[in-house]
Image (cartoon, rainbow, N blue to C red):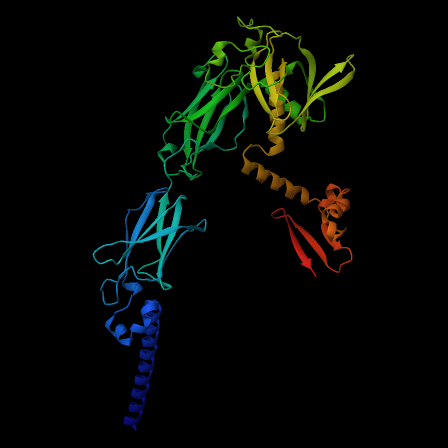
Length: 518
């Protein structure tokens, strides 16, 4: 009895191992047939597998032509050596189905590659070249017939390149900064390489000498004794913090450079106010319902890009200054005598009143001192640009040129020019969210849209539309809609048809999703 049980047990074990061997053999034969050249598959047999005469992905090698880490922008290459299972070189000129996929892990960005068969003595090497422009971690997958080669996938890290001033920019940028005398202001500079990558590993984050600030006016090209700066770095945010303190009131032109080259948006105007002027601006902005106006003198309209077409010009020394549009704004200089050789204006300036609201800047004059007449209107938006000049030759008031790119530029001289310009800029800051960069304006718009939409009712409104004149009928149905009506869910009914469309507004991404019901 003991021998019978032992014989049955041995038979079962032998049967199991036989089945396992046959399954592994079948799997390897299928793998051999899949990876071999389809054109020569008829010439192969099972004996090729026994001799190891087939391309085996696990026997291939991958060698890299660089050492980690490397910077972006360079042409990188690596080599794939092909071998038979028995260790003999496999000729790479034959179709082998080599697939190389290089993907940026965080951005899910695929990188194009090129393959080249090297004419070496054994001709079993395929050279793969590629170029990456986004810094980060990449996955390099090398496959033969759907199977990974050697230890594929591989992971490589590419670092940002050196700082390029034309790509470096100031975060939360404005074309005009309003500062207070003696108070420190911090500019957040974001160093970037040639391809826009944050250069967190660059020496620019610790090299204070590379960053320089130049301030200029009409009469004084150098104001080093009137300002101080300090540079610190924040590697977590990949930013350079430039702290600037000005000790002179007025309007100046600033230029920030890296290695004596201006950065992308590093040229802007700075208005420095006293404490009393700052309080006046804050009062104007905090009470927008009250009429805010400034007395000014209108000298005319025209093209003031070079100020050569105006009826009076700046002195030659000012035109030779580095700034294309110099400015002057110290209160002490308002009573200076006119510059020599400066021609007087032919026409007498017209007295006007400049009204500023959160939406627009209006220039008006009054007939008989009681009848207002609007001369010009400019929107409070980034498209309305101010250019600052020195005192006019008649009233010795500081001059301002307003240009929106649509109307002719308007030249105004005002006793409180800096306060008027600062009030306009503060209204502009509040309207667009505190920055003139596109991404910041998009974020502010979406945030305000979600805030307004959350207060609107979610009821349904029905629109009857004619399909053959869908545009005209849509405009006719919505021409009397209020803001609250546009926030409702739309139910579109096509006349003489059974189908209808329900629209549902979502506040998460401020989009409209359409659901067609037929």
